[in-house]
Image (cartoon, rainbow, N blue to C red; front, side, top):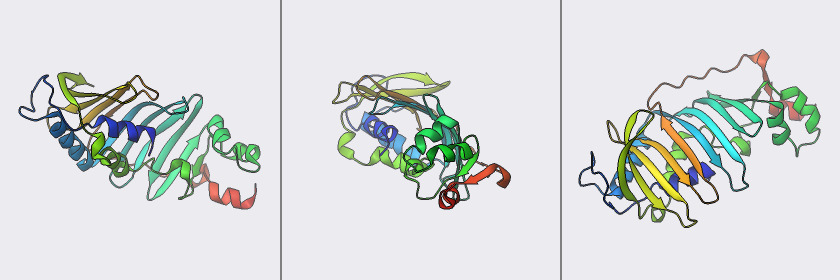
Length: 238
């Protein structure tokens, strides 16, 4: 599970109503609101995820990706000076990374330096079994990870209503075992989509917003003359 997925899971607590504003979930406990939020977000045709996640090794990963139920997606990922554009369409993942991205991604491969010069700033067709990009464009997998362990979804409390990107939301909070504060923001108008998750303190603080629900995601495959097949490149020994 990715760090972002784990943070989402921890943030979807399952219990105490704990006071705070009841609008518009009058009578609903925090666990009920969280359950509604996870269900609604699972059911959305598409969404955008944007934020920064600190991994356990201390590195901060940024992402801004739109993804739908059919695993179509496009956007950007990066850490430090390493950046890459991502597109997934018709079952194929294409990635255009800068030189630093490929130096890191290929550092354990034979002839890595030579390969970097051939793929940097090009659209690269990634192997279907590539572990480093597995799950990157899987909306259902990402949202399902929020609901893997019901025991992690207990003890949240309702807070006040606020706004996230101009949309009204209710805050649900919980203290984690590492001293961090997890907050889940749920839309109070329309369907109760997750609008933001925040983890402050602890070893892996992060912040991610969710939006553009149900908007079409239509990435285009790069032109063939702009594309390098990584598997073919590896097989050729170039």
